[in-house]
Image 1: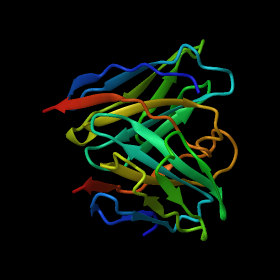
Image 2 (image 1 turned 90 degrees about the vertical axis):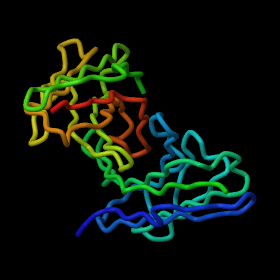
Image 3 (image 1 turned 135 degrees about the horizontal axis):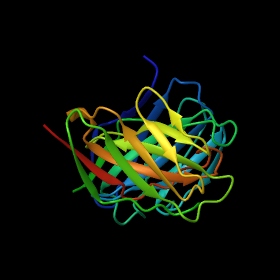
Length: 115
Length: 112
């Protein structure tokens, strides 16, 4: 099946620990995104990548890092610098063509909890 | 991107049409209106988008006013599975090429 997969579904982090969230897509999409969602809130953009080996900061990039070495993969690392990492993390992808022509497809999400 | 205003929550009876309003009075000429929905604890799902003309697909219809300052998403025959948070988003950023801004949306509850 084509789609976006995220793993793990639940992730526990200890104070001061870095953790990496996986996002893989087999849709042949150029662009990929990471969002964070807090309870009862909308989604906020962390990082996005429009092409391999290139990525841009979103609205809340502090305390996070990403890489885009392959078109299919866009892992997100939550570093110890992120003081309030407990949230629902969503990965998305899109074909990245003309304005208004594309839509984003989302993965099932990873719920990160700090112990 | 223009800001959108949506009601916090709405109820609709199963089998009836669900009409979800969205105000975007500061929308500019090159901004599209997108609708996504998010079922509890899942990733958002794209529903429909439009620029000026009304749009329809297998999931819903999108009615955009002539001045483009507001729009309505219509689910023609709502089912219990349509219970979700519905997000109205206005963006000209490459259709999402550099990310979309999601507000709090409308929590639509379909009543049996």
